Length: 104
Image 1 (cartoon, rainbow, N blue to C red):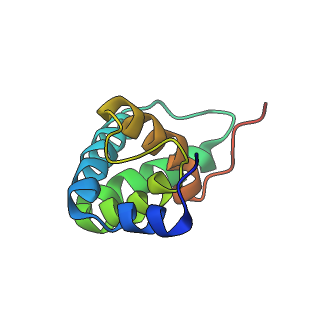
Image 2 (image 1 turned 90 degrees about the horizontal axis):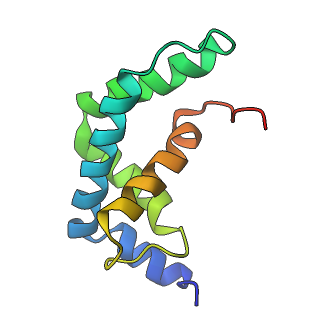
């Protein structure tokens, strides 16, 4: 069963969870920073890289921001493994960066 809104909020504000999310955010930022420029969508690349730069400028701020997005994924709990948290961080990166989704 999906968590309630209260359970998601509790998870998003739980310091050990925020620290795990922050580690995943830092990993994603490192990876995004080394991505090649998308010649078909340079604005998207700029937004993604801008977020990566900002993450390293103020890591704790972004751990908290991403924790809210990650905690609202119905399959994520404190017991989720690191791979699930990393996947979820990666999946919300563009949303938090304000980058448009890739065309399907």
